[in-house]
Length: 156
Image 1 (tube, helix red, strand yellow):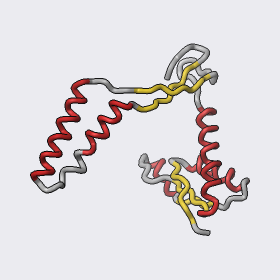
Image 2 (spheres, rainbow, N blue to C red; image 1 turned 180 degrees about the vertical axis):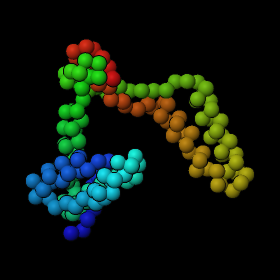
Image 3 (tube, one colour; image 1 turned 135 degrees about the vertical axis):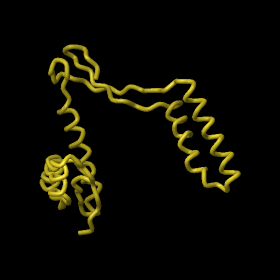
């Protein structure tokens, strides 16, 4: 078996559930850090998590099983915090930031980093990319999942 990391889980329960699903599909898998994660949760610190490894040749099929499990889990766990109803629909909403001061600040930081990188032989250029990423997020936006309760109309 040539192991390949499939995923880190923050708790042992989800890791065990996906391990059972993989074993049902005749995919050999191994969990690591189970005890360590349980101890870390009790002490209040969560370092890495439970690592789930599969054979490299089974990785694509394992990834499909993991994705379907996560989608099923996400749909099953959502309930309205206001009325405790499980009649919830999931939609995505495009979020864009439009504060003008943040846009000017990102451009100013980027220009300063470029000037410093020219003066100090390029060591500031990498941090100068962070404002560019901020600008891209501001202009393009990102998708945010919004849950809507069909019973009381609450969005969360």
